[in-house]
Length: 216
Image (cartoon, rainbow, N blue to C red; front, top):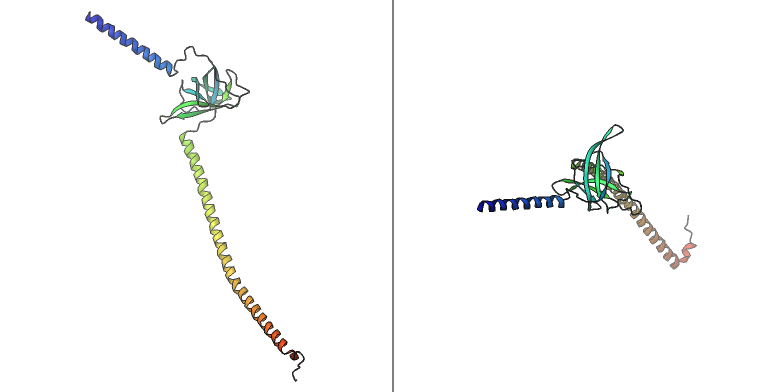
C-alpha cells in the first residue's frame, strides 16, 4: 500500500509539471493553438539575429509572432524573408513601417510595426519592405561622424570669433586715433567761437572801430 501511494504521488507530480509547462508555453505565445489571424511577409537585408517566434508589436501592442525566417533572392541579391503571423483583430495600414528593435538589456530582438493609416489596410499575404536595422556599431559610427561635424563647426566658430576680435581691435584703434583729431577740431571751433564772441562784444562797445582805418 505504501509503494502504491508513492507511485501515485509521483504520477500526480509529473502530471502537474506537464500541465504547468504546457501553460507556460501557451501563455508566452509559443503555441498559437486555435488562434485566428493572417500572414504578412517582410523583406529585410539583415535581420541582426532575430529569432523565430519573436514577438511582433503593432504600435507598441503585441500583435503576433515571427512564424518563419528564410533566405530570399531578389534579382541576384540575397535577402531575408520573414513570415509574420498577425492577430485577426489587428488592421495594418498601407503606410506601415516595419523595423527590428531591441528589447531590454538582454538584447532580445522583436518586430515593430508602426502605422497611422485608418482608411486603407494591407491584405493577407502582402509583402512589405523592412527598414534597415542599425546595430550599436553603426550607431556609434554615425555618432562619431556627427561629433566630427560638431567639432568642425566649433573650430569654424572659434576662427570667426578670432577674426571678429581682430576687427574690433582695429576699429578701436581707428576710433581712438580719430577721437584725437575730432577733439582737436572741436577745440579749434570752440576757440574760434570765443574769438568771434570777443570781437562782437568789442564792436558793440566801440562801433567806431569799424570806421577806423589805421595809418599806412
